[in-house]
Length: 307
Image (cartoon, rainbow, N blue to C red; front, side, top):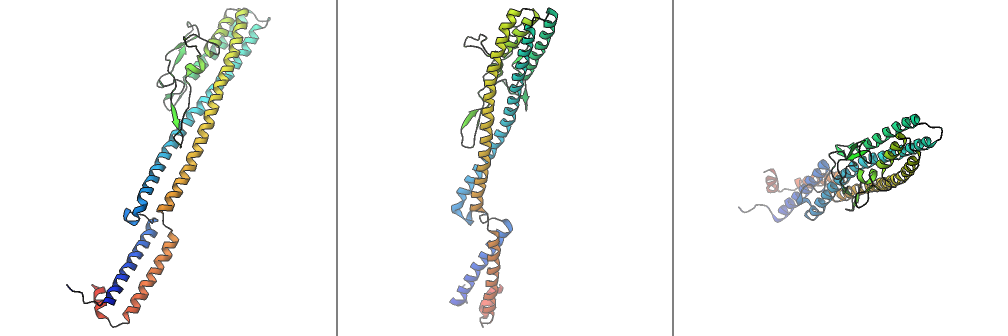
């Protein structure tokens, strides 16, 4: 059907439609808070916006992983620190046992105290966090040791699993987060023989020397306890380093989250104040245009508008 509108009236209607469309878009931005609510709003922004959402999700997962690891590492550091303190007690008891004023009976009492310390260390080696035995390496669903007075080290090794677990920071760099009980408390050489620094063996040797009232053996055992203490403190330094690494990585995730969300806001969020001002101006423009046109004798135009 041929339009009865003049060219001027058609141009007026087209301009009015564009203004109304712009008003509708401004109203949508105000109500949703978004300047890009659907792909057609800004096709060139869709890919960057989607990528930023992916980046935010990945960063949040990294943050979750790091927070979980932080709890385990903090617990491990406290546990190893406790073992270091227990080894100090063992050395003190050994020194007491070397005193010439001690008797077989009093050394037997000291031996019982050292045995209690060994049991505490074994218990610490079975520390669990969120269902994981944090010193059991990759076999983290069961403890690695139990007390066994008949064993050469005073304990029975239930598993010998390395700790290969790592966590990633926000840059995708991985780092180790833990050590196994085998590495911390049961140091051995390549042929699986007990070597200097073995915590279980050192404590057991002090206990055995005290129990047998053997001062010569106690001197050697006391030296072993000192070596074990030095070794444990080295492992404690490892956990201190991991704590620092995790803390720095968490700071990175916080900074990355802020940066990603800022970029997303720049691309996606509306300037609500500007949108409100634009909405008000467009409304005024429409009202002014309609008022101006109403004063002109062009019935066919207003017939068209009333349809």
